Length: 125
Image (cartoon, rainbow, N blue to C red; front, side, top):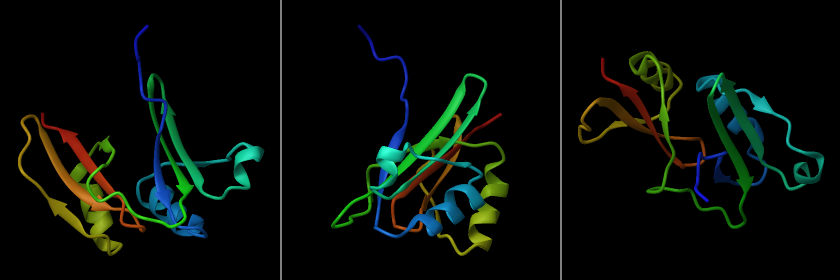
């Protein structure tokens, strides 16, 4: 037996934040919102997923009461054209933070609308 992949990452969000989540994850990051199964839809939250060939990115946001954002724990997302994404995020008012260099990558941190930390990384060519 062995673990072969991460199926999805779940982050917490406050109740009623679905529109903000969609504006950020779909509107800015380009991850399409997908329907939740009906039995889970009643809980609130929303799912964003992109599957391109063998590559899948799935971020699920679930309602947490009381809500506390993940400030240290975070998903690290590989992106193409990090500079353009950083420009888009900053233009939308998202705070983007540089961090210590990591060999082989350009990377930054940004918070989603709820304060959850995201690492955005691009392989250096």
